[in-house]
Image 1 (cartoon, rainbow, N blue to C red):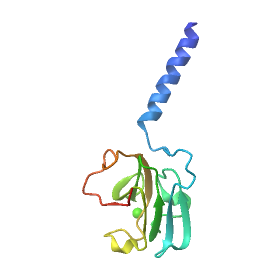
Image 2 (cartoon, protein in one colour):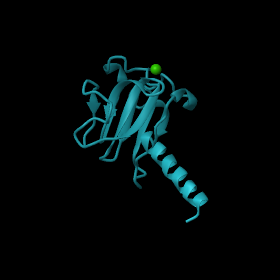
Image 3 (cartoon, helix red, strand yellow):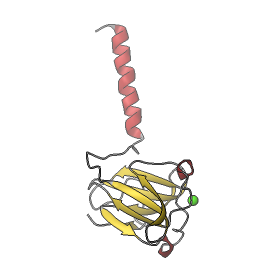
Amino acid sequence: MTMRWRTGLLALTLAMGALALVDRTAVFGQGEEHHVTLYEDNNFDGKALVLRKSVDNLEGRDFNDLASSLKWHLPRDVAVVLYIDADYRQPLLVLVGKGHLADLRKLADGNDSISSVAFLPCPLGGNPKGIGVDVPRMGSR
Ligand SMILES: [Ca+2]
């Protein structure tokens, strides 16, 4: 193994390590049915946005502070966290398994407030790392 090759390999290993630290990539397998869908109006009406990976600012998807209802279907080892602010700040709700919420007005600060969405690895029965137990959790799995 030449020195240059070894240096390249080390750089690649470090790069992969750095990627692993920011683990908000979609953690889905093949299941194309997995998604979180946000709706502009309650009762799953109006404009819809289907998400299959994290979005740090829904502004870029023309959906900032708009969602009023949602549906989701997630793999067993994934949770989705909805945040009131962009860049994954102010967690509002943790979604697991499968479910739907017809009216976000039922949730304090929930309506027309979601600005970022994170797909995170999640142990069964627990919350994703960094998300407190005070954040409400919905869905069956
Ligand atoms: Ca917001």
